[in-house]
Image (cartoon, rainbow, N blue to C red; front, side, top):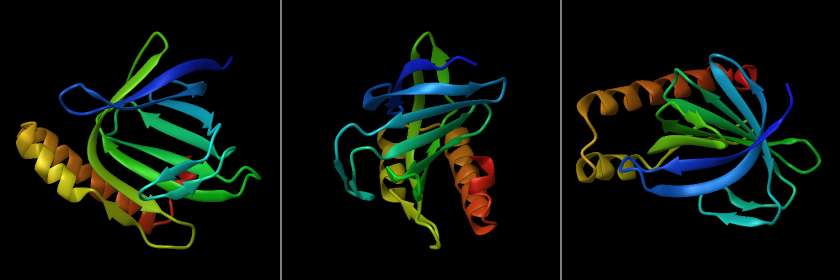
Length: 159
């Protein structure tokens, strides 16, 4: 497959854009879209610390799962960390890949246990943005699934 450049948009439940970046689709089938992007400048992230320029982001979006997985690699190619977003399945239209981020994230450093982030944000936004009950249930089930994959050391096999 020829790579295709896209803009990725992480949306809040109300449709507003939270973050936007670009990457190249390197694989796409009926169940998954794989993207690769690189940081062109260093970034300070509140949970990930300093992400150096040249860090590569391998991103995996399933069309039937309520999470996505990012595998960050140091510029030299060594695994930096995994970052999983609990999110609604993505939609790809033309050159835009969008997904609704449901706030909860799972951070995994090599050799460490999973760290669940932003559960308080999820609970706050569930009320403020009126998440439907089935969305809340799906998010909680997806968090359990991601934590199960981490516990079984299976994130690497997904990506």
